[in-house]
Image (cartoon, rainbow, N blue to C red; front, top):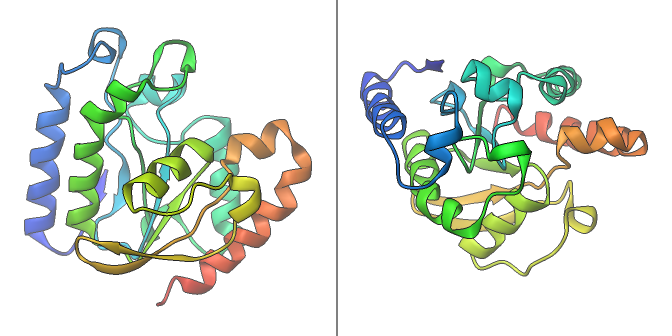
Length: 199
């Protein structure tokens, strides 16, 4: 699930994993099947962040394994990337019932885990996928609130705890499944993201 040449990073991430698996701070712990911590390269320069796990993720414990995940894999290929190059996670680690939008108190209880993960990875680019994830990071880092349709594929410099990094909003892959006209824009945005991979 995690890959890194730095043993300390892996150990720190494993500690968060243990904390999340025993977490019962909100009602989602009562309805989840598995927590979804995220997966990928702990030395990644790029981290993709969605809102919350879906049904397939809840069953497997892995992020983006359903239809949106398959599309994401093909989009990564367009960008010249694979999952081993990046880290993928969600703000919320447990699936909300019927895939409803997470409540503010659920985000408040869970966001610390994601911020700890980001602090371990120290990425140079965070790519929030979809409006909910984008809104979270805009509020977290004091950016003007804008919708994904207006700012996707643009770079915003933010001051993360580990230094200046870029925020690069993307449409959520699921949006392109239901609105096929978005696929071309998402592919172009992913190509732009792929150009940053060497950084």
